[in-house]
Length: 127
Image (cartoon, rainbow, N blue to C red; front, side, top):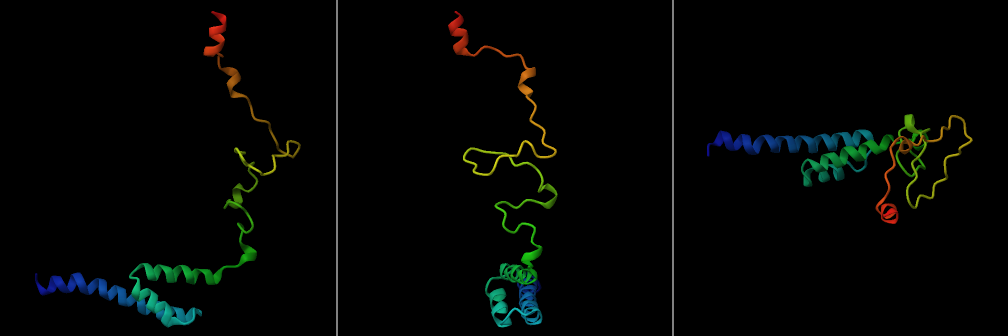
């Protein structure tokens, strides 16, 4: 194997790895994640994924619980869909939709348009 190819195969990923480690160390001290050596060690010991761990932890610094639209809800619901009526399922303990609330429309029965065929039990009784 040639030395140039070996340098490219090993040198470029190693340079990226050391660069991401240095960036995590520098940025952790700048944004206030203490100690920055800890974040550099995590980024160095867990290649690539350590840097993503650092980025996710860094994003938690700007979390404001007062402006969180999903705070206290069981499910993450986008604010544009917050007024939609929930679908009930078996074992669902949520409150039913208030039928007298403004804008409520009862569901239409789509099965009434179909021709009803007798079931097997009804056809056995008719024989």
